[in-house]
Image (cartoon, rainbow, N blue to C red; front, side, top):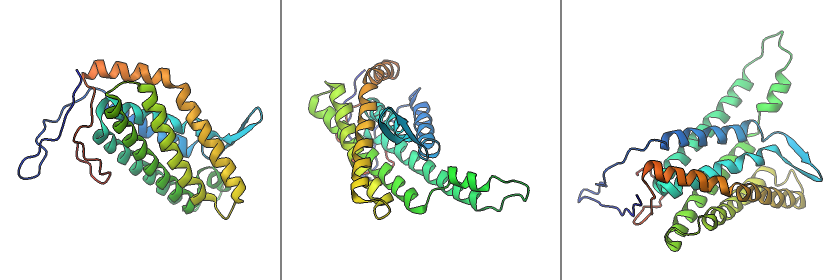
Length: 242
């Protein structure tokens, strides 16, 4: 059942809309956080080569987090997606901090793999900060653009919204991450080349997965009886209000 909710605010300033309970929202949140952690902790450190193209392995999995962002915003709305983005940000921050803490612990004298462990799980504070900033900004832009496009298109052309919001969100993500992480260590030409190539890989993955997005969105809208339109939504990213 489609819902075009607008904010109903009491004189006290408190939102008086009844809070709905959903069957799959928490599961999607958990899946989003899992994919985000895996793409940053497992895939980010390995360069891969397929044919003539060399890329960071994580770029194949990170776009899946954008797919989840598209699904969440399309079905549940921007405000509920905002909570998921903050959950992912907190999880990514905690995982990065714990990685540094574990690496800093002195290894047992008979364990010879400290250097390898640090190489796989260690990132410089600069790269961690760049990753956190890029994720936060890119995901919020992606969700904002999709929510606004849904209002403009009156819920039509889902493919246009998912791909269009991903193009903008990934552009912001790439424009923040690569210069912050590598400027000065890489040549400007290399930063630009990797930034552009990884952007197209990420958008390409999202485009190829469009049929899956349609299938999941259709299932959730039927199962949850929800098709949220962000009429009257507060788009401030610094609140957890739904």
